[in-house]
Image (cartoon, rainbow, N blue to C red):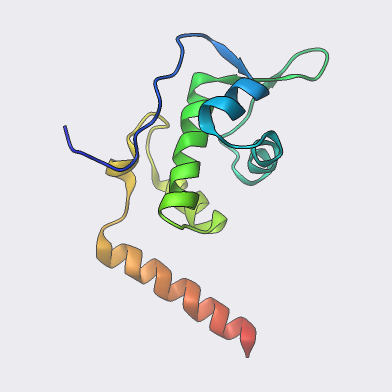
Amino acid sequence: MENHPFNSPELPDKLYFKVGEVSEITEIPTYVLRFWETEFKGINPKRTPSGQRLYRKTDVELVLRIKYLLYERKFTIQGARQLLKTTSSPREKISHSLPAPSEFLEEIRKELLAIRDLLK
């Protein structure tokens, strides 16, 4: 198996996780999790009648992938969103969905050109 910097913690074998549990597992504050729900459509926790968020295991795995892309790979939210759109399966390992170095550099180049155009 390939040694990759993205090492997800072992998730408990249960159907649903409360927002506090997800925060503890992922080491992401709850307010960031709520914000990411608005930015990444794949994070879609169910709600109890009282409005409490219940995350599925796939939601937690996606949060971990997003954390890796944003914090380790230094992707922008838009860049991470775009990369996740091209991933065929939510369970697919992040190492298989990362762009080739030339594609990654092209993405950075496009972002820099867009920033340049904004500054004109």
